[in-house]
Length: 269
Image 1 (cartoon, rainbow, N blue to C red):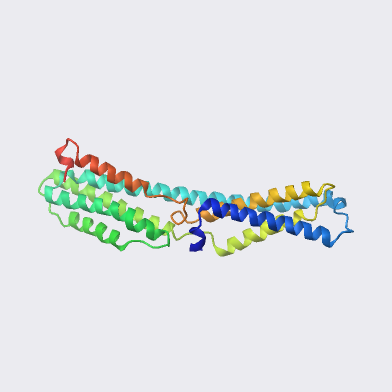
Image 2: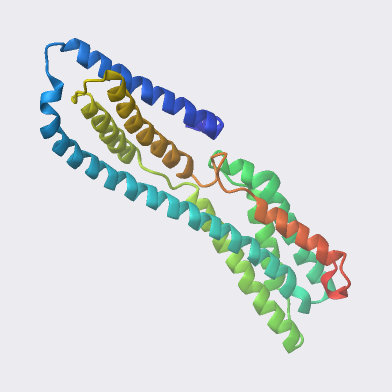
């Protein structure tokens, strides 16, 4: 499966479409040549009702799984945004803490964003993650939790920073869990059986113009194959080349650098 994800999505799509059309057209030509005396046109009326039922059932199944996978993909994208926003909030809310502790936490957040880009995102392409991110997160949580406040300002800053670190930690765990969720092999088997049945049923029809018949069968094969490729590319939000990119973390680093070079002393390390 990892080898398939290493193929550029457009190349993979074109290859799948070519194979699907070749299978559909080859099967139709074989069936019609294997039974030359059969009048396929005679059964078009009855076959039309049957394929309408089969096609509708398969369309419902395929549409349902497409919606589920797309929602899963969108949810993962939103989680990344919330995670990056929580890291940015930690950077800002620790302003009320003493300079040394504040600098420590901010360095952790910058290191965290850098780890996301250079280590965790490449690791997620193979279903893994970076242990350094866990260490940096726990370092920041430990530093904030062990600090003894001396006034209300520091107490409020400590509480808010702890809350945002908790959000950061939880959203990362959800992101990693989402990267392990996929369409089950049994579901893929059912999808392929439905797709093969729908395409194969097209072979049992007949038209006076064989080329038009091949074109119609190819269209069905193209739609089925393209949808299956889409499901495959989206089922793992962070493994495909069209998956979720680390742009949110690049944006966070750019925001941090802007704050560090800005005119507000409290925003500098």
